[in-house]
Length: 297
Length: 319
Image (cartoon, rainbow over the protein chains, first blue to last red):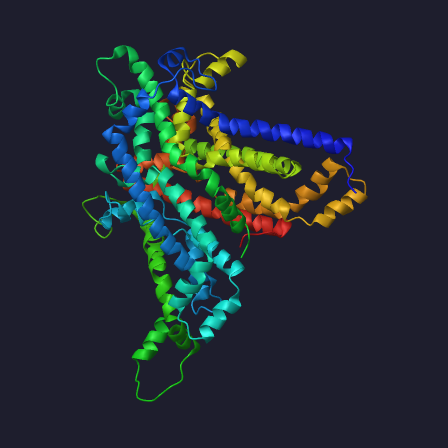
């Protein structure tokens, strides 16, 4: 028997209002950027766009997409993300599997070994000098190898293996004479599509969105990922940037203001688009990942 | 492991029994192989830099190497703590992280409690998705949005602030006193929804019979939130706080590098950005390493201390 008291109704109404306001605040900047990127010249000059596009103009989209600086960096990002995600999956799933095996001979030393870096790190400069000494500076490897093992994600994988794959399956496989490689590749991995999806998404989003690593380790302009390109074109001093003026028509003084403004919004939209498109379908995996992380294993 | 190897290299004329360790290695050699690449990766990229803190006591030259650099003792530390920067950087890092933590955690918990009062269904799922999304927008884009939307003449938010609060049309990114609020509020936009998931998880773990019992005792909805839900989240809140306290002096440089400029260093320059600017951009590697080492040590001390305090006070601890 459930009867709603006035208090119940009031609390629920307030909750709904608060949630709506917060969600609207989260959504608004994104909608606004999309609208600005599509609006006509007039609306941009008068700053009259508030929510939905006014007028229509996709000239800036054309300029961005055909700009070599932009698409090189976009392709670079795709390559780095694919490579980095693959390496990170291989590293974290295998480490997670070893951590999950309760009888592993080096279980204790290994646990201590991975916990220490979680508490103390050498910091930026020693890491940078190491990368230089290893001749990884200004190579793709500096972006994808040092960050491949994420101890946090390996522990996540371990928690998943421990909580979803019954120990009996592994034990009976051992009795049947399966090797550890076989157990890992033929039994554990096929049962773990969820954690594979979670870890792949974490890694992919992390690499796609990261500019700092590239800022430190990459020198060649031709190698820079999308986010580093965005850093230049969207930064506080963007209007003096070469990459931005490369997209302007030097003779068209009148429209340069409009174009430079709209181009920035186009860049914001285009670079976030891959995530926007897949987000509704993959969101549940991210949430599952957080929930899994909160299980103390 | 070394003991085992030494034994194997010993005289092998007489058959002898294997120690448990040797047996274990023979049994688990495949597991060892599977884990080895990752372990090597951690050894190289996490452990070697730990020894790299010794650079903090050297005059580092890129032409030389660790073995040929000149040792300078505590020279860089002395320079740093005698400079005008030391106090400013520590203060800025601490204030920025402290307020981000306090405001962030409060909003996250509040949001989780609010979501918990909304009935499950499409509306709830949709609004939750909206609040999680900003977490996946890159920092570059977030700061880019802020720069454009807060532009004093064309930015929609700036115009709103001017109309509603009568703010002068100023370049907000050049104002030292506005840096912290801008950093913290944009941080809320990015992370509060996502951060609330962990607290929602904690709420869903609370025993439902407690609510029924409270209802029978006459506790209304608000009383149940205060006396059942909040206490039920206690251990998760504490663990989250411990993890964040360890990071009170470790804000990443990423977002601040994009947001600050020389005119706002006074409030915006933190240890991480300083290490980047002096250590990397200007090539003062030894000096940068010294400041970074100081930072790492403080972080570890904070983490261990927070953990110890919470163990004493509430019997909840991370390790």
